[in-house]
Image (tube, rainbow, N blue to C red; front, top):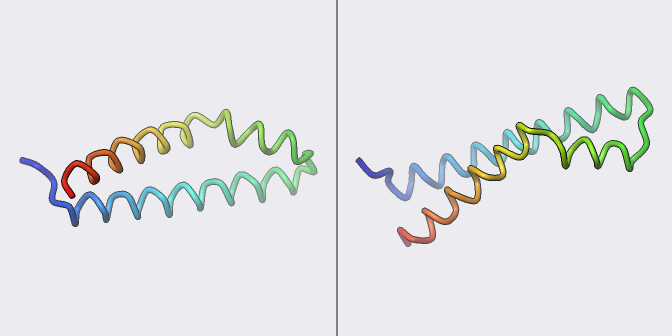
Length: 68
């Protein structure tokens, strides 16, 4: 059973919101620990959960574009 366009868009929105909350949480915690901006950026780029979210978002966006 294929997901509808509405379901795909809802999933994309939910993942984007979660990604943004996770990034904010990581940044806030890192700033409390007084890490440098370079270190914080490195942590964000290397975070496995954020990487997985980005991969999933790309796949869902591609699927959404195919269904349009």
